[in-house]
Length: 187
Image (tube, rainbow, N blue to C red; front, side, top):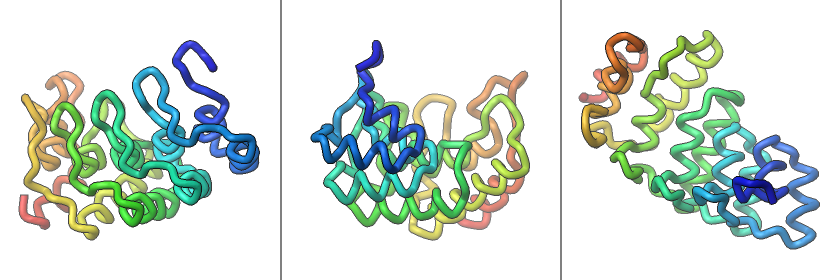
């Protein structure tokens, strides 16, 4: 276990190493072990877009709705991630929702997975990241994510996140395609 209280299963899940995850589970690793912020191996795998690892962890009983100290679910992590193929992320969303992860769960700041999918950072995305993020955003909407849930403070609704309004003006990046999609859905 490292200083962040992450065991070998966390590390293997984050790396997307299916064989190592299987070996560690067979040896009795605790699938829902949380690190110092209660992120589980499932949070790590979801955030990295490691769909095969997510499937394996869920198949052995990992909690699809596990909460971190920030009240983030694995769905928040898959929606927020910038790595991994779009197909893998959509598959993870399905697996998590089918296993009982709540679609519109809010973290301690009131942000949903949809908010994270819409939210821009302070650095522009690559075209591939933008395409993946768009597909995740669209898919969460197709699955019924609530566009009206507003995060606390100045973070606002998912459409506000797509417009970059949660960032300082100096660092604000607007994601026009994401905002347009959310506008079509009634925001």
